[in-house]
Length: 226
Image 1: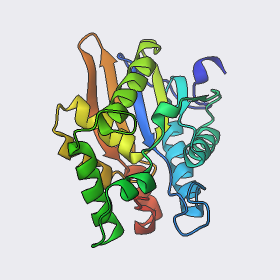
Image 2: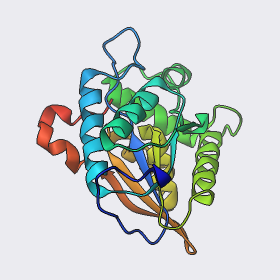
Image 3: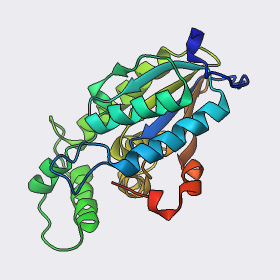
């Protein structure tokens, strides 16, 4: 299928190259292997695939992190949308290691989300700039985004399957927002949501954040954040 155009869909005209940052579907926090996509995650991914098919995007590239939940989301979305493009795996789109961060910045009180928010705040404000630091993480994400944008032809869309922390980093950076915005965006990014970025002569710009309207038909149980 030339250019990965969606089967049976009308052309979707886009002047500037666009990048869809897609958060993976719900993982399996209650299971032995968190990284597995849950049944809810598969349904979220299926609904997103149907939405992409409706839009009739001209897909020029598909990129995914190496995490299993990211790759399973990509496989499900592409199959449902009828997009015949082989994903490229790039580990720079992987999520931060939340277990490592919770051990490095231990917070004993509060819910898991409250502890994680406090931990991420400590991570972003720490003076460390070495491996495992937030500046290194942000640097890798910026480079990954630049590589996708540079290889994308005019009128094409890239689909990037990644995670909430990565999306929060991209979006807060493009808005020139303080690092605290990364923590807030990370907290509210819905599973299988889409954040849209445009790349043109004026640079790379954020067009929309956390679009999840395609999940509303499935009811409130599809509004998840893990």
